[in-house]
Image (cartoon, rainbow, N blue to C red; front, side):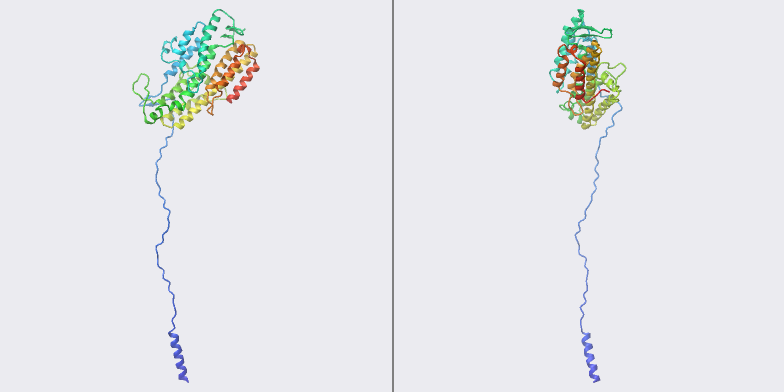
Length: 415
């Protein structure tokens, strides 16, 4: 029995020893895996940026020589000065005045005789009305053929009668036509707008002029179109010279290197009245602002930065236009005050100045790029001033209303 038990255990043990256990072995194998990686490549790009550093004054040179001249503009301003004087001289003839204005001859200063003249530059920009230049010619005719003979014959001016009118206290005398027009004042103040302002902002500083023909291409490529007076080598681009000519219509009788008036400079034209605006209290610094814009715009042309050029041209236009706007209503108000005080010679003088400045309103260009008044609007106001017996018939109330209209048109007001 015992042996049987042993055998049974042995058999069981054998069976247990032959049992197979399944062992799972995990084998890890590295397989290549595609992974997207953002690759950042840094490229160094060199960009040339022109930074404008304008000179301290309107001085520009090339090859050691100045590139600025505007002798033609200086000549015309000197001619306008003599025309103003002779348009108040009862000895002046129509032939003399017409030759001075339209032919550039007959001046007391013979150095002014030549190819330069004011007539062909008056209201000559592309935007100017063809009706304006004939007005100046008609004023020459009426002064020489109506006013001067009446003055020479000793006629005392009155409503509807040309002649000489003297203030009762002797403080002023005026040579006027039957409407009270003092022609040297109308003529000279009219030229400030129709010649100087028009030539500066609607001609020489306009994109149409600065980029005309090959001017822009030449400026880009350093192709020169002008030489300094007395020299033969071309050293100045067309665009540079056009801009300088615009500058010359303002600063031509004064110092190129200093803003404002020179000691013996402009005493009758645009820069003279700009100086008055600069001194009136609410426009302090306008003279330098315009001078700096001229300077930076010229530097921009040298740097071929035409966006900056045009930005500065717009500043010049908007600020110079203020001269016309301010003086138009200033002299209307002065005329009103003079009439109220019974000062008729003073009134005729002031209203003649106002008439000339109002004529110039159509040549202005405000910040929005538009003139203060159109040719039609200007003519409507001038017709109102001249209605009936002209200035003799105007009342302070009428003139105050006109001043309000001018202030509304310009957005300007008395300081």
